[in-house]
Image (cartoon, rainbow, N blue to C red; front, side):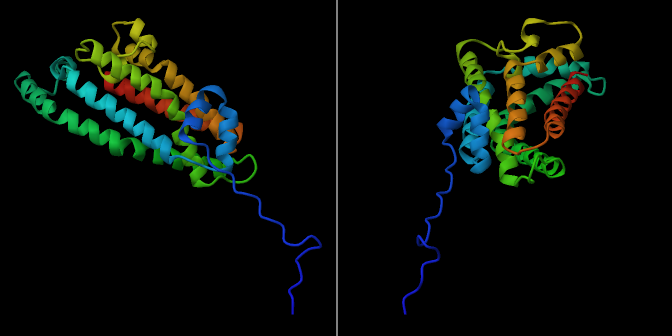
Length: 246
């Protein structure tokens, strides 16, 4: 006995599943059409290629910077300001740091970067479930929102690597090498004020704006939740910078 079709017109073909944007689409999208990009990622979350690109670029900067930085010039002023460290210990600490600064920096790029983004994605997911615009997001959507805006910093990482190759950098840390922050141009005597000015950085602000858009259009979070998710990490980063400047 022949089976009857499920409808007058027979079985209808399933709609094709949306494909996630490629890495090149994501890189172009964060600069040219971020809202459209995040709307596409809402339907097809994608983070692996973007995370890989960020890790590779971070590794390149880490290795080049580690080969060029003057560890003595970078650490001695900090150690001399610490009353708990005796002058006789400073040279020993610096020599030890010279041996470990490269491997620790590489481990940080390989494992620290994805771990921090995973935690940030978890934070986005929890806030998104508490303050959804419509339906609660998946963790893959939240993790994509944590990773993809970071692609906007790829030109900065390449710029830092190029500067390190072209001229001596002394004891500068990577965040103080490129002329993209107020701290690069303004050098007040106060170390805390210096830390604040270096946090006012062009690509960091661009990443924050993109994160807000990702939270609104990818995670589909309410405006209040998106502001919380953007501002809290910025404040924590500023607080950490102020602590290091003491």
